[in-house]
Length: 138
Image (cartoon, rainbow, N blue to C red):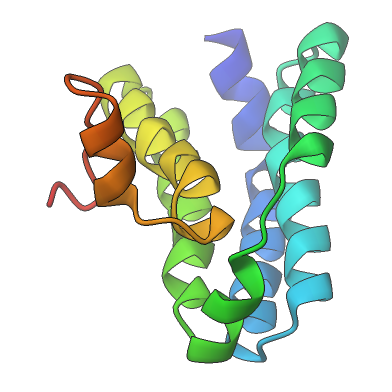
């Protein structure tokens, strides 16, 4: 896979960003966390060489409203979210599309759920049949 090869070339850089993401989360540094999170998330589509995908992803990421993030940072719960992109990166580099899709769905649910200050269980109840499994399989 060409995309997988490109991602593997970027893996060291992405791993460094992932480490920074966890450090910012542990330090409860919301601004630093969100900046590194954005950089990390744009690094994956950038490695595929698809400029349109990258621009679209950046637009969506920049428009996301995350009012719950400060509370998650204060309580330390954001550290769990900081580890999710690493799992996604690992699934992509392992060439496991099923795991990648499952992890991405779970991670995206947080932008509408806990990152937005809402219960993810309540979101599932609002949309029957659209339940999103937690990345850990729970």
